Image 1 (spheres, one colour):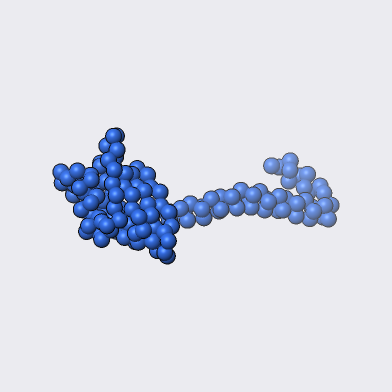
Image 2 (cartoon, one colour):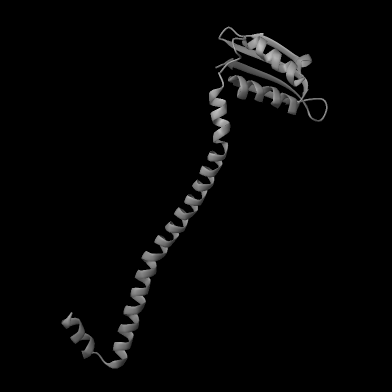
Length: 158
């Protein structure tokens, strides 16, 4: 350190100013070169923490609903999938449009013609959420009138 100080003192005043300004600029570049990436990373991590806290709050808010669903017995209470689909179709008001065909692999193919989209979703939601039925595949086409659809849905009991 003494050698550097002796070298610096041996310089002319003008050269000492240039070296001092250069050293300060190098120090600032080094500081900002290291500090800015760290600052950006901290900001990104803080955003992730906020997102995760919001996700946790949402999960905690739906926790009671999930516990209620978990406590319900899966399946239709001993009903066959055909009977269950038909019963729920009557409950949701789309039974007149329902045509079912049992598959050889334990699935049930359901064809619905010209039903309201909301009614179709209510029927499918009831089967999935309340009775544990799985939707294997679904093909939904627009109908002749606004809001009406035709659908082919393949279901499987859980």
